[in-house]
Image 1 (cartoon, rainbow, N blue to C red):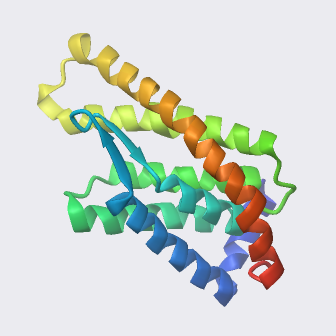
Image 2 (cartoon, rainbow, N blue to C red; image 1 turned 30 degrees about the vertical axis):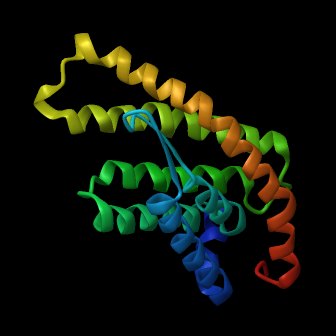
Amino acid sequence: MLSTFKASIDEFKNIRSLTTAGILTAMAFVCASFLVLKFGDDTLRIETRIIPIALAGMLFGPVIGGFVGAASDILSSFTFATPFYGFTLSYFIMGVIFGCFLYNQKRTVIKLILAQITVAITVSISLFTIWRIIMLGPAWQPEIMLQPLLYERIIKTAITTPVEFLVLVLILEMVVPQYSKIGVRR
């Protein structure tokens, strides 16, 4: 596991890796800002930001994947909303998880499923619920609000995770091998 982080840190020395990571950060910013599907009263939002963050983790490891996630959130929060750095931490962790599961090793559908489930449980359900609770502040009433918030996150995650998984499988099968052919990987 430590070798994965060391190899990911070494990606900072590769100008192609940094350039591609910058492009993926810009893509994640665009996805977070403009490619969001909203249903109902904005309680169900399907974001596509996970795709470039996962791709950064797959190609360049947990460190750069985490930085792409965090940088995209910082950019989008300063542009369109008041920053809340709990979400920044969540997107950083998302990039780290994908990097840990899929960087510098044989990328399989099983590993992608494990990465997706780990992200769904730790980030989408757990951390995002915690951040929503913190953002509610003094209005928070745990006896009334915990179950609806948690159920909302579980339902949203159950809907979005299969869609994200299918898109990530397509990327795993089509995009990543093409990047390897053109020399993005050393």
